[in-house]
Image (cartoon, rainbow, N blue to C red; front, side, top):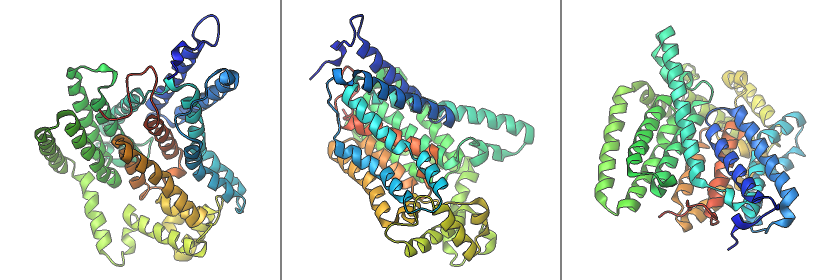
Length: 435
């Protein structure tokens, strides 16, 4: 194995090590900022992309080329974006098609950049530090939102300031709930791997962070987020088994979680009350117009619209640029004024992709999750499997790959965890495989 820390690119010092360290910190800072500010995270992404490409162009010929994953994997993760490029050629609305490609650019940029980093600067990859940074960013973001809610409540006296979209005004509540659940997985993963040589005293910090994230998730009142909570809970049970090899801690955690979950049910009735509305909506065969503002009812209407459009364009869809127009036309025909006025998408990424690219696009989307999940399962990388399950599940309720907040989150962490899954990170104590 090549010891990259000994490779000198100039006579005055270890330039390679400095470059790798800079790339590492750009990745870590990006992970920290993603849950805090969309525009700043986009700027850091551009700096990371440009910096890596410049370094490869300047020094690539003088460095060993040893990628940690194959070109086939690179093509697989890029295929979804490439399919949207193909969809541009049979679209009428070219301006929206190009805008959609711009929004989804991270889906091809991150695979390419991480492929180059793994090939030329593997020492820059530190999954443990990256996950810690993201969890820290989510905790900071949640604290800022709570403080803002307290200020708003003091002015308005409205308890709703602590819930849902009023609490998370900078991010869609469902998207931020996704961030929170991923942060819970990250905290659990870091505890398992004892990242940064943390002392046993910091186990308390992990526990407090995990409980705080749970409480904030409840306050966000995202139905998909609360259901997704099962993923970090199951992962925590796995981690307890790995660290103790005993059933007692697992039983203790299960009892404790049942206690705080039950307590939150009574302390935050507004959050859990939304599930009663869902049940009522599902039980109603023909919902009345009065329920049209409820998100579950609206989603059902949107999904029906997507299915109607898909029946007319089953193989290739309507094209990358004509998705919005296809939905608006269906809303007009069916009298869905709420969907028409808000210009809503399918609120289901699988249906959204099917409308745009047909069943071909849907197959590509499914494969981008199924293939790495099988790899994660075979290698015992449960943290990566948990991430894939989390995103795949949330795509059922939101078209998350149509917005920058969802695209960047998925594309970035998919490559962070996939790259760690497929290679040894030189000169870093953190490893991808569970202990």
